[in-house]
Length: 420
Image 1 (cartoon, rainbow, N blue to C red):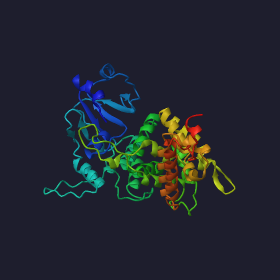
Image 2 (image 1 turned 120 degrees about the vertical axis):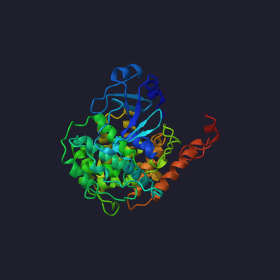
Image 3 (image 1 turned 180 degrees about the vertical axis):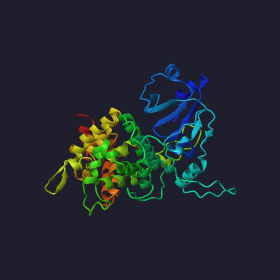
Image 4 (image 1 turned 90 degrees about the vertical axis):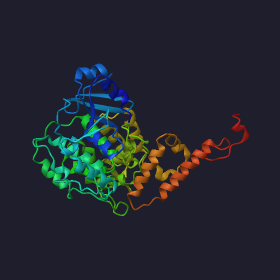
């Protein structure tokens, strides 16, 4: 992510700009950045308004000011350069000066941060000089008197982004979730998170390596039932154990994230450091996976079809959910397409082209196939159906490029080819 167009005018005017919180941590850990950037600046709000076109004010509980450009967002906190921030977790106190690229660790969190980085990469430190021992895990660093909602949301995103990769399963009764919940119980609720704050949280969790960890914490803490009831009821719908060994619809949904493929993020994170592609995940696919079965609690049985019409019901429910969280309309329509059509790839080899061509023509169809692969991978069904559907799609593309065949593969006569 290139910050020059946004940060450059501030630095040129003599103001400091520092990445903070997750943006600074991601730079240190060399993870692909979030779709939004968190920054601190010595500029006050009038200076931001003068130097940055399109400045908006999302609310003090989110940021003092924000700028949106080319599908990215930058959130600014106006602070004194010498102030020491006290976030919900001391882990989030790390900052990085955007101009010099130097990190600032005023609360001596480097040993813990480095340990998290090395665990995420599977690295065993081999230093000749021993580092100071980590005195306590990050979840013990809650700021006394902090906001429970903010602490919970930060904890969920920390788990999703920096949770141990070797953890294969998660449930609400395993550490660190139990320990975090005990700490959160000592805090006052604070302000109800606005839709924009909820959207940023969900976006951050879903583009992270372990969304299952973050989402399970939110569910165990009651956040999902309070704010995202469309997801909460997934835990109340059982699945057939024959095809879904992972359990109910909620467990199945979390399981699908394990099979996502990373997407290339490019050689740089925009801060002069190499980004590791293993942390870059597609938001569109991840939202599709999260919401692909939200229609099952709304569906009724019809003959052998237990969840009859759940794709159409789910598409409408997904649209309302995303509109409530104020996602961009084009993205909402993309997710509507994915959820509504997520059952089609399974039947693609057997359906006539007249029923599928419009769906196949969509530039989102490759993403729909990826959703189908992740969905099938989380069950006992295997991937035979996925490969058959992929072959059918490949055949369609080949026929569409062939001037001597129709899109369904039939030979075309000379009169048809010449347009007679």
